[in-house]
Length: 128
Image (cartoon, rainbow, N blue to C red; front, side, top):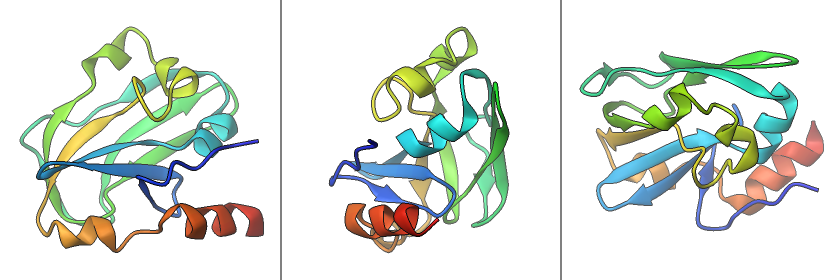
């Protein structure tokens, strides 16, 4: 049974976001990681890159499928989790902690709060 931390916001692409000061930390949810299977590769963007909402910002490849990382809002990449280069399995092992993917500076910080909360994400997952 997947858990849905209440301090996070969620997207319909099985991504989570956590506000950390003026930055938003992004990762793949436990549900998303389970759907991918054993993650073997994470393609990361470059710090400093600017993306508009909906643009492709990376890719996560697992044993059973792969998915794109889509920007949930306009923002600039502040940093990426370089530890995933040699240990992509962190996405499966600790999706809400060491498996984070990138830190984003949102163009509008309120955009993070407009994403699904834990209850809405749980309802979304249950409806699939």
